[in-house]
Image (cartoon, rainbow, N blue to C red):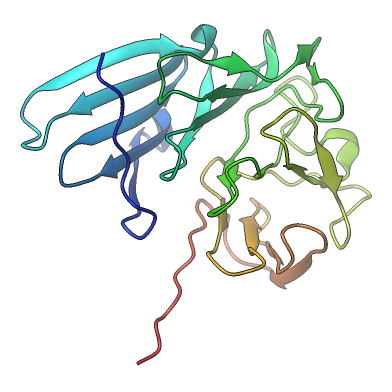
Length: 241
């Protein structure tokens, strides 16, 4: 199969969600566009799929399933390197972050042991992923418990987890986040980052709060509350004249 071609960072992506009766049929879809090709990154209940088209978007090739057939909740790509990230899991598989260094040809699973990714990240349910706009080894994610325990942060203490080494090790970023009786849910499209330096990270909850970090996750503050359930978060930076 021919490799994926990603846009330059300024081009951006078009995010797509398909739903029926308010429930997602497949989540984590992003369309990366250039003058030469289009690739749709699809997360489904049975793995990740890559749907590639030419410049005319007339002929399409479907590849997959990838990621061992796991439920995949979110798939993102880094435009500069062609690296792909896929986050997912469930009660049976536990949680995992899959990584492809070759635009989807091969995939590796971040270390997983009985629902716990080694050296830190612990969860049994899928979650959103954000990739640093200039440092492709840096990613953020927010895992939750699974259906049995309830879809809220492990130990009812909120944390955004950050990796600086491509998912090999993880650090919990908790400063400013609720650490007791925290039962909110963060949906798969309810986390985003901006392009600033340092990078800002943002997420919203089903309880109607929005949290922001202006220092790449080191500290957090609640910037809005009592909103309706937050379904998605995106950032927009205005350009000066």
